[in-house]
Amino acid sequence: MKFAVVVFPGTSGETDLHHAIVDMLNEEAEYVSHKEENLDQYDAILLPGGYSYGNYLRPGALASKTPVVNAIKKAAAEGKPVLGISDGFQVLLEAGLLPGVMMKNEQLKFICRQVDVIVENNETLFTTEFDQGEKVLLPIAHSDGNYYCDDETLATLKANKQIVFRYNENVNGAKEQIAGLMNEQGNVLGMMPYPERAVEALLGSEDGLKLFKSMLRNWRETHVVTQ
Image (tube, rainbow, N blue to C red; front, side):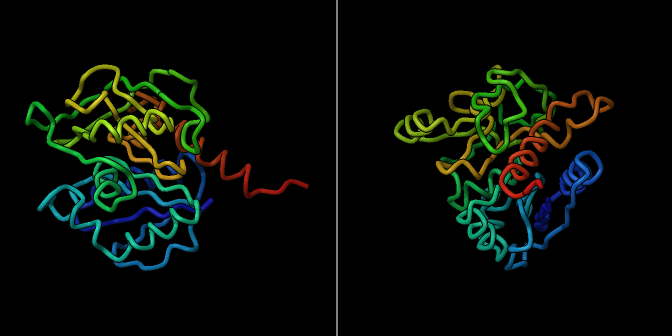
């Protein structure tokens, strides 16, 4: 399985993602410029965390206008898995690939710590290795992680089981404690916690590795033919 790790000016989490895929999952990953216009050679697209374009205007707003985002939209329309983490989640929101918006944390402070996250839906491309309702330990590091959507959108998210992760407690003011959600088709996931920073016991948790194993498992089930 070949992963694209998209790098915008200001991205800072690309090496962590590359490490998770190459060293822990033993799969292939390549860094891809924000200027890239074709992602056809990749099986999955990853948007790392960081401060793309310095978070000017709004987090993810300027990055969402770069050439690579058009290629990401094409890949998503083709059904390829797309994962946006923290700033990557914000880019997906600004690009219209996921519903809702991200606001500043209700504390108006940067939050950096490990938090308990509940798996709300384990029947997705990203979560089949988890148990339904499983509590996992993942790190967060953000100033703008306060997810918001209107009540009609929230009702749709619930009806379609698009809410994939919730914080176990109110961390940043996010509506319904939403930590991660997917599109209606189920192949685009945005999440504020960093699974790639929780792939080794030495770092305090290995829970994040299950997400990448889920992506690999589902890709193999649909692409690898056994004799």
